[in-house]
Image (cartoon, rainbow, N blue to C red; front, side):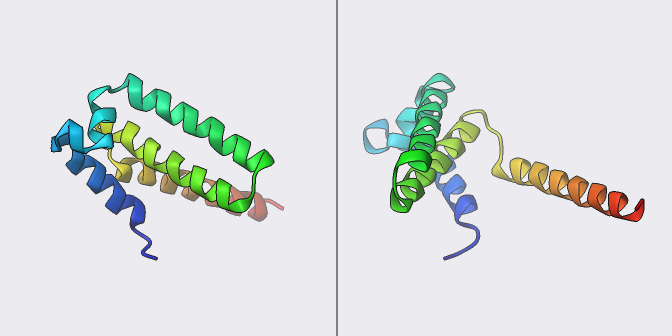
Length: 107
């Protein structure tokens, strides 16, 4: 599996902005933005939580995939690039690593 699957999916979602609504579920979600994709993201988050608590691994994997897809739709609906989110995660990881190094050095 390719590591850039989220980037490729984000690009596909962006392309679907111009698809015919009758041909694309993604387009219909984007047309209802920001409310429709945000509501769907919330529903999917609840389904992930339920799967985590009461279902098997396969169900959790499927629900997690749905959640990631709908998160990418929400980001596209607000014209937020996935790269911006990934950069923020990278910044946070770097800050955490720096804090750990400082804490270790002060011992």
